[in-house]
Length: 67
Image (cartoon, rainbow, N blue to C red; front, side):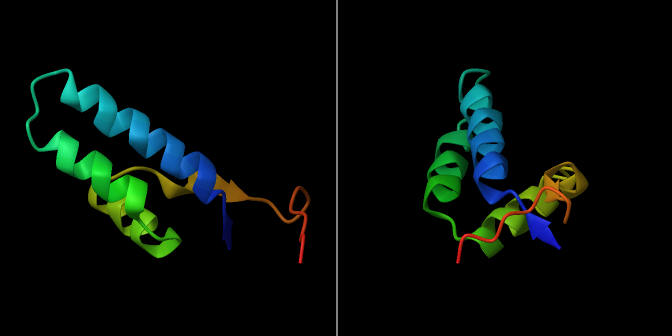
């Protein structure tokens, strides 16, 4: 399964960035964690926050391997 981790990271940054402005003091630490996270860590953060990972699956039809 291929995941668009760049889009996931961007969405997580938006998610925690918004939380910072709604008086969540922990959100800043979460935002920094997202910014430094590996692809695997991003997936774990998303699962912990109960974010639907299926929205980030890249179908084989649209997948381009740049290796």
